[in-house]
Length: 360
Image (cartoon, rainbow, N blue to C red; front, top):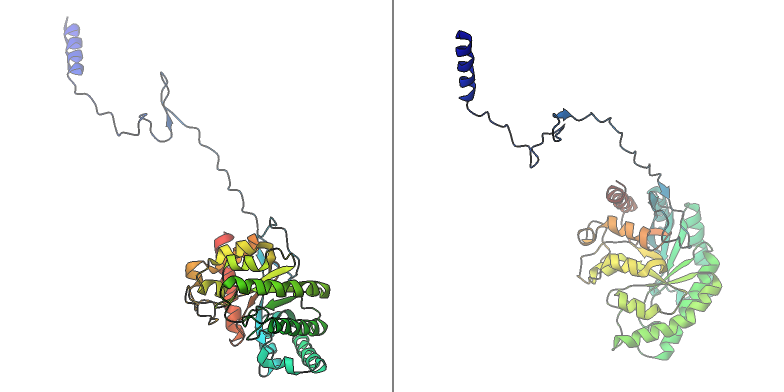
């Protein structure tokens, strides 16, 4: 009897105990991390998964582009590609040979030679011009430099015929083609010739475009016979500052190329990257320098002294050229008077930024 009384007392004590808390809330399904709950089955910890090593990132092998006038396929792999840098120099630069040595010692291999009306080439005989050009070519060779491009002389009233007189347009075309022929004879490695219009345009602007097209129709076939490329430059305060006007000027000329001046596009508030994309495989050569966006001041600053990086990013400029143009030429700085070591340093900064952005 005593045993029965003790058993009943124990059962009454269990029934009187308060309900135990259910524990922390682990989510809608009441699951805890690492525990799987299934109906009518006890909680069983998940089997530990073996560590799977991450796929190794493909190694990017740096490749330096050997400058060529050929256009690469637009879908070509661009990983690790690097443009060779170049720098401009004036034909009449004081101590020309010494300046070439400075350029070479800074690590450049390519130059553009700039010709101007003020150099007096139009007043010299063919023999005198040839002797001058041959001397410059010999000096470049001695310095270990290759002439990548030549900036043809530009006149006050030239092939775009700002004066509106056919005789002036005709004479200008003759002058330009004479210099081109003499250059081809003296600088056999150079295949790119920058064609620069004069400042100012006719009114309406379409008339200057028509004059330019008339001149191109006469110049391009001869350039092709000579085995070189005429590359029309986008300008400030003159012809072709915008994509639309460049298109109107060269449309239909399959042998017309473009010299893309990035500083010019920036200071007339044109979209630098869209301009590159539009040019595409027509890109013949480039001019690299900095300016202030929308200022219309073409002051050819060292990279970083303007605001192209702020608005577009020099890393994006570099990548867009590689990705959208097939351009396999020289990354040419048009900064004749600046220290070549400083210019080379800015090139390295652009490449480093490009690598950090696009080759992570």
